Image (cartoon, rainbow, N blue to C red; front, side, top):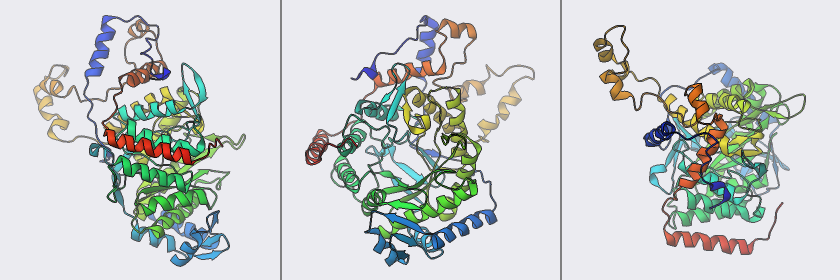
Length: 518
């Protein structure tokens, strides 16, 4: 047990019998776990068919006239040429409609990603939404120790917290960078940790083709020695915007596609720096880059699962710093989500994004301004759904807990309005005398357990009761929750022979690889 799994902090408040009783009631509340969200409401649309067609036409013009630069991966050039592209040195130009035809003809509209536990299988696409935690942060933050470099112990803690949360459907990938392990070897520890400490679906390494292959090999062992052509990883492949695909990402994408593992093809764009400053221009460039990347996966293996990804943020034109929770990225999200639906592939975007350094009011409203368009826009795979701080440079323990609570609310929201007999409550309205409250009616008694979402972190008590219990703010309450959850964590079952084989693979590969920290 690490020092992060210390006993729950009381926060300095006086623990009364009433407080203990309320805590027991919250603990006894049964949460209905679902493997993923199924939205009942249509996605929010902001553009006409004509406007979407114009964006598609413009993106095809970019692919045809400007093209995509392929860097440090000459193996991809003849593959693109054989599929019909025009290759000039390292520049690849695509005849109008070529990429769209390849993707729409071959890529599946949805797919199942299997977890070690079949109860945690997720279906990515259609009306479904899958929440996955933060990705890629080199720093961690908590109220006790502040901001510091992430370690493997932190990585394992967040895998455990994601596994324990009923609101996260996916274990994620590089939930934080364990900088105490060499870059050349840390992918082995990360994939092993996902397989060991969780049985939810997870993401593989993409920082080299060989590391992607290690991820496939470890997954094969973890799933009993044979993937049986199942998709068990959905991994992040980022474009080097603007209009560049590099050898690191293409090599990883090729490995995953060849093995029928899913790729999230995502342009990572800060508008005004890595793309035009206009939202429509960002959408055009995002579509062009993603079409080229998705087409590559289908050239490698027609029918390999692929996700159209978009990560677009605005920036301060005064300082150059990325900004989050602003209107422009929401407009891009709604637009590109519609483009993905027209293309017929699953879509990734969104999350709980903020530039704040702390789990404070800025973090709350910026994250809410990102999460709500994510759900309303119909995003299928949501990376960075919990924990993101400081523009992605840090993952916060308290922020993780607070974000998960908001994800729980989204589980209720996407079910929409219940217009069944019970939902309409006509019998209750008939039976209750006008002017009297409904607290003791049969309808209320039958529904009170599930009538409203119950927050894990919000305090709705009186000022006097809140003061008596320590006067804690939301972050302080979340601090106690993550410590308690780590203390109560129980690992999912993993066959001892499989565990031994995984450890042997990790040890062998570490011996073969040099220690590289950069």
